[in-house]
Image 1: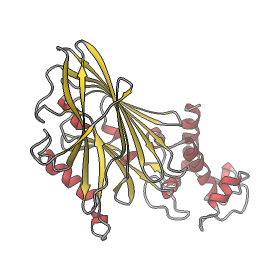
Image 2 (image 1 turned 90 degrees about the vertical axis):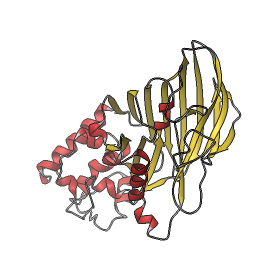
Image 3 (image 1 turned 45 degrees about the vertical axis):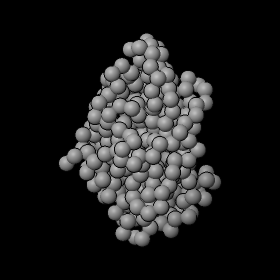
Image 4 (image 1 turned 45 degrees about the horizontal axis):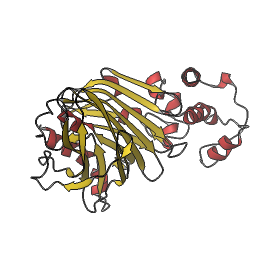
Length: 343
């Protein structure tokens, strides 16, 4: 299956529920910059992308993206047009990237919007790319050039969840692999909105690659942000990064549907990888949910107020460790270990 057909197939799966529910729409997303004058199938002969730092700030109604690019020109000084893509998926009304801004070496830079009508840009074969934010950039010889973009974007949907996507494959149009790619994710949606580990993946070479299979990749969480670092990235043009954001039900059960006392936190042992994407506050919630499912009465007002909104929570007494199962005790220890690691 070629890349274009695969991507369309992937997105059609993610949106099948909404497309069949008379609630269809188009959603926008961004991606790596490209030299707009170069063919899609080839790379610039002298300019390399040394690093790409993608900072994603999750907000309640949209997410904000700031990307820092660092380039090195090993050839003669050259001035070219550089484009940042806006690409779409879905149907019905069009949503645009909002509040787009760009800089060059720290200074604000003007840009023009170039529509992709099938002939004007090197990515016209990709129906999902409909316009480019284009600016003129001079890359001095034997020197580092830094540029950045900022924009706001509406969430996509992965099944029932919110989704964020970034088309990093457009970065293949520079000389050599992307030297370093860093993705920083900060969750400011709510204390109970969860980034799902198993629904975070790269789509590369027509394959979904989940965190377990990411090569040369480091994932850390300092309690404030998740950082994913990759080295020497050689993408195909349509390669993308995606993750999904679940609501508070996922805190009760990171493995499936929550079913009152038959919750999975008492059935499945948590591992380090299961916990790496949770915030500090979410780890605290999960640890205490284990006690709550046995009827524990909490001294913390925020826990009591939140848990009392759920019909299954029946506060009755102070739960002792002896009342917990072996798996529950192991999961509490795993959560505490992750909390201690972040201090």
